[in-house]
Image (cartoon, rainbow over the protein chains, first blue to last red):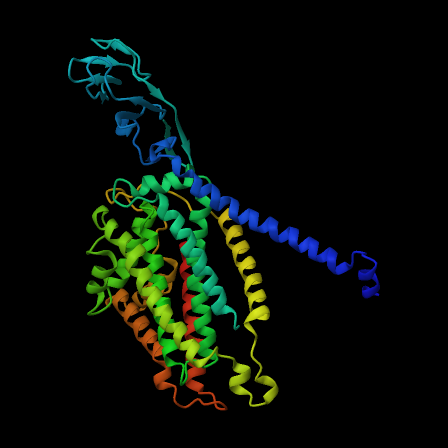
Length: 149
Length: 324
């Protein structure tokens, strides 16, 4: 039967199975090799390209407190307000680049160099600072505070 | 059963490949390690996948070496002339655990730091050798950002070199004595003395195993990827439910049980001492198991093997369940 099929050039069941398994095998190879190729070809990326910064567990940060961190190699400040709201701002004073501090009593940001004052949204309220502080997007995922660069 | 060694080799191949890929982007040191792992996981294309496959390959490698060793123990494959194969195999299991332990520190997140610290504490409790062992494992008494570099170098240079050397001896010994086949070993009939040809019979089976193992790793990596956590800092409290590496859980649980029954003794020290003693008896099986021969099985050997497996399995399960 099979010999006569082969003689007449007809496809046998074996040919069909060979075809199916070959396609499957190439599909499998592709699904393994593509991630490997993509991984290696990502070498142009730089570590600074990480789009957000992990600032620890939200529950462990006290209400009405702040935390300094670096964003793009410059100081920034994370504030947890009295209402539990999270704010992330640049900590570089727009006047003469001093690092600002969170003042709990005033519920504001103060620059110790020339007494510039910003509110918690980063707006320059009083003193010499000419511009507001840059605000960063902050969000909480699985109770981890993340700040987008 | 005969393919447990092949699965182990395939997992090792996966580990080496993914390890080399991670090596391209990982940066050691307190200030870079966590950031580079974050970079690999979030920025590098399929970085999370490569990292998860590396992790799951390591877990399965230890399990498959252990399974391979248990099966060889019950088949009494350690007997003359295969003692060297047995000893080197047992050493390879220890090295695989050391690999996994050192690798678990490298992501430098809070969970990995405290997990490695509690594993180290268990090892340090070992009488006489504990502190020296910790010195070789982590390059000091406690894990800090400074010795992260030491652990990394051990993980990528010292351990692979040692592992390759012992694996070479393991294979040389197998080559000299032939693959262990109980059908040939325990049956004298000529029909059993068939050898499995390497090509195509063995090669095709090995290739099918490669597909199955790789698919299993992909499934595990996709459905249970490795988390990044928060950056390691020993000034913050350990995350809830921090436990030593899963391969040390039975030691921890044994210590807890000892402490439960005798509060005044050092449960950790007695627990690790018992485990080391049992391990030594297991390791030295070719020396004491002189009774069993081709037809006769030693009763002690059989019951000792079963007890050890039940003990490790039950203690690990209890430790996992107790955590919840």
